Image (cartoon, rainbow, N blue to C red; front, side, top):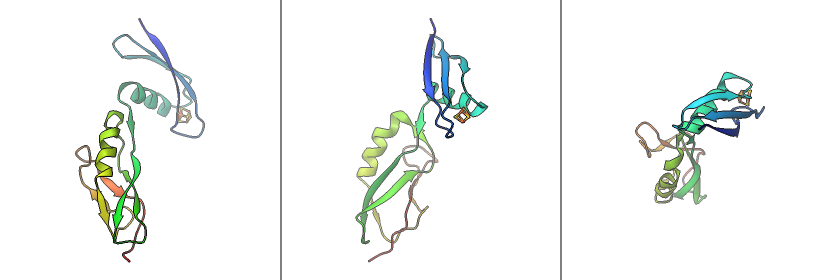
Length: 123
Ligand code: SF4
């Protein structure tokens, strides 16, 4: 038995309302309502392997600020977000830091890094 899932595409500001028919084994049978092919790819990804870019802050030492905004440089599986937050909470960065610096290589997944979103000079 199939089910119809409704999603709002967040790939661009148009925010198309997409309806996807999902088969009983999780296969995508049809996608409608997408204004362009990117919407179909978004719907298939969301319904089969949802991913998110983690954005958060980590502790920072040696700078005027005590927190540093960071993000993953690639989206990670949504089911890994909780573990990623736990690892980020346990991590401390040290000034100086430049925006784009890789703070943790292979964070959560091989080839995905935790990077600084802001520069902080030492005090
Ligand atoms: S389906 Fe295409 S046009 Fe519609 S919101 Fe997604 S990216 Fe934008």
